[in-house]
Image 1 (cartoon, helix red, strand yellow):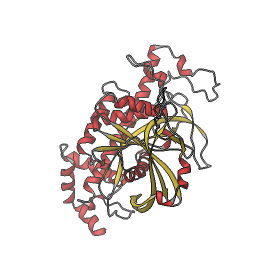
Image 2 (tube, one colour; image 1 turned 90 degrees about the vertical axis):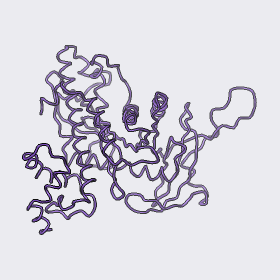
Image 3 (cartoon, one colour; image 1 turned 90 degrees about the horizontal axis):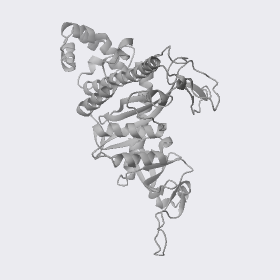
Image 4 (cartoon, one colour; image 1 turned 120 degrees about the vertical axis):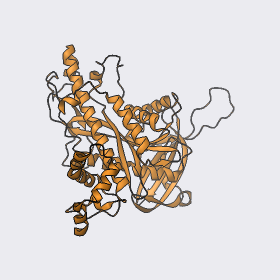
Length: 420
């Protein structure tokens, strides 16, 4: 398997495109109108290897005092899509890619243009790449991704083709916006903005200005009050955005959408689903072991932990063509391993959604209370590890549906039913 991930017999881009088409065809995607719902975020994974490409000193913000403020590791950009039924919504991972510490390495590839884009801008490109296959999409992102460069890249991508990508994110508490300009008819250049509005001051508005509704958030009905305003945002850009000021359970948040036709209730419901990608990260780490990779190369210069500010990276000093090829193979192996992990988790999620309610006795798991709804990915994994090799040994052409039917008739399942 180590040689498989470093092989040039398969293409990572082709694998991503094929996986996107499979998700579009078989996954029960959640939609808001005609738009699929994408979720994006960055995840940092600590790595101690001295000869592993892409390892860089990273800052991690956390309220947990047991976590170090700075780590050496990889920064991954992840894009997923919401799918599920009425009772269960999951974030199916589409792909993850390295977005920091590897820009100079990728520039060694033939025909590859030098890329100095930030992590925020790269996430917009990755979301648009998924939307080109899945169709019109809404992209749920954290407040870190609301920036002028991100909106500029979003407008540029939307002008390229027929696919449209819109953002639903959150603004900082100190954010400011501008009213629409009022043209006075005087001579001179038309105004681009109106009066400045500090968004956090709008929470002090009259109570009758906020609308009270009850929305299904985080698995239960929650009372919410909101105020919706369409304003201009971004110094020098003045992009039209829809701001929704939300009061819920003593908290105050400012949600933002680039789609001005999206209702405030829909914006609140959608942003509440953004946390599903954090659950996906936890499953990939704890159940699947997706972040336990260790691909390295002896051609990679040793990591310098105390690099001076004006000193160049050791990888920039690699000029040998064979050494560069080996380093590129290590980077592609890491991204290929993460892509296979995304496919594995996505298949587990689709099996859980499709077969949990049809034949729940098959997914009985000892030392665990049987789930009344959709079982977890770990439960499906335990069942497949226990039975899939025996079933395919008898008939390698079996489909998942045939496996389920055959497994129902075995004595082991009848024993499990009697025990449960």
